[in-house]
Image 1 (spheres, one colour):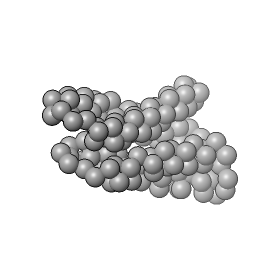
Image 2 (tube, one colour; image 1 turned 90 degrees about the vertical axis):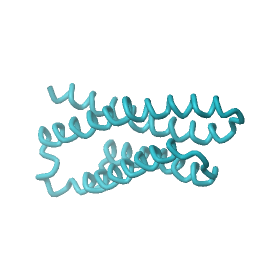
Image 3 (tube, helix red, strand yellow; image 1 turned 60 degrees about the vertical axis):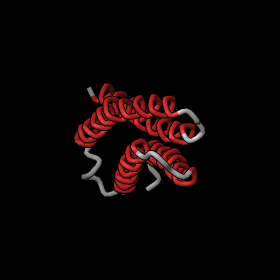
Length: 137
């Protein structure tokens, strides 16, 4: 059962980071569209992805992570300080997900603000994966 939950957690985490990364990239690309109809169509697709894919997958990731943490007892061991930093990065990633949702809703968005969400999503995802695999402290 532990291996199934671990696999589910890893796959859902990849989907969360991938969905956010792609959504924020589409926000940047949407800025290049000229026709209002094209912008409205892309925006509609983005809203649906954010609402019906991102949030459910985020829920699966958090629930599977909590179940996995209870199986392994990661919070009861003194040498597992890495989990605190991983949870902090998760909270930051959720905040960036909320910011990404607000960017999807925005009619006019400067490109530099769109990139300010796009790049950290990648870096935070990489940090979470690093902490989970290496467990540096």
